Image 1: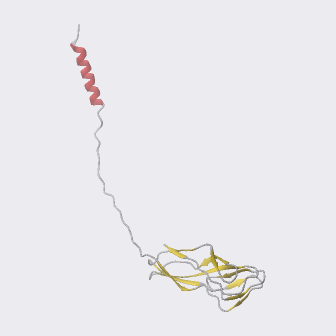
Image 2 (image 1 turned 60 degrees about the vertical axis):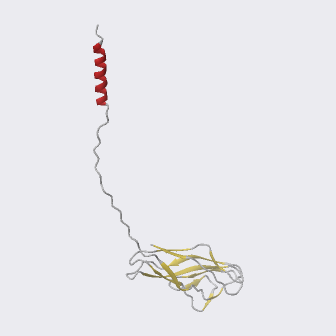
Image 3 (image 1 turned 120 degrees about the vertical axis):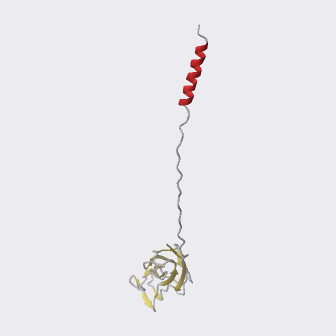
Length: 164
């Protein structure tokens, strides 16, 4: 009758299992991460000249007139223009040689004695900051004149945003 060996085998087996089930030792190596940032000049924007469609005699049915960033004014048949039209002109200051993105608000109108007229489909000159960090650009637009628009002076605003 072997009573003492059975307990030894159990202890031996338990020891082998304990050694085999231990977690392997990890080998870790530390590294250093780096970070950097470039802070660029905040952009400032100033209107240097307002947009002007000058004076217009529209046909009774109304229509659209287009003012280009170069200052050319045109309209469908029946429009008569008086005076000198001019696009809006802006000056922005930012970071030298950076490209710029110019965006213009939507839903703009001009108001006066008659129905409001829609000011939309804005066009602008290309935008890049020069070596001195200056950006000069012009903006034209399309003005929709309603049928039988009441005579008088109309004015409105639009927002211009310049981003890098």
